[in-house]
Image 1 (cartoon, rainbow, N blue to C red):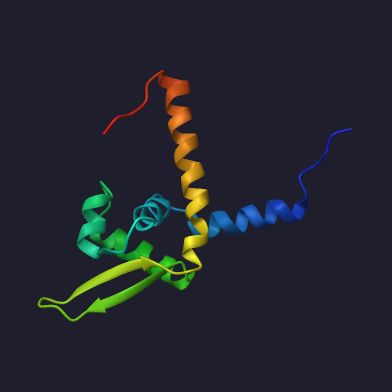
Image 2: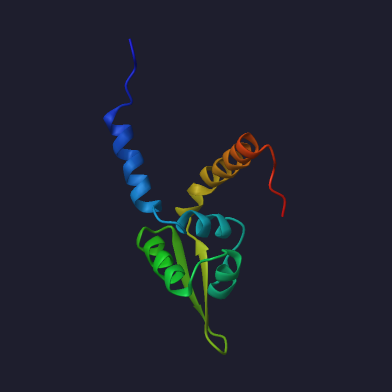
Length: 115
């Protein structure tokens, strides 16, 4: 007899995907797992993301209480982002995704990407 995935699990996965969907959100969270960052530093860290898209994704992450935005009193004014306490609950998931990605790349290409 086959065991089916409980509908509650499927719904929970869908909820998670709704929060983290998009090309950039997981990369933003991954970058912030190590330290808070200014907007410009985040944009440099995440290759290919436009300022407009980064701003939009950060707003979504703020709405979902995963990221906190702080306006710094510098000249010119800069903005810093960091994971909230709730956002930090994703760190292990990000680490597991990274480990899986490394294994997957090796499985498919036979190589480990080096930076």
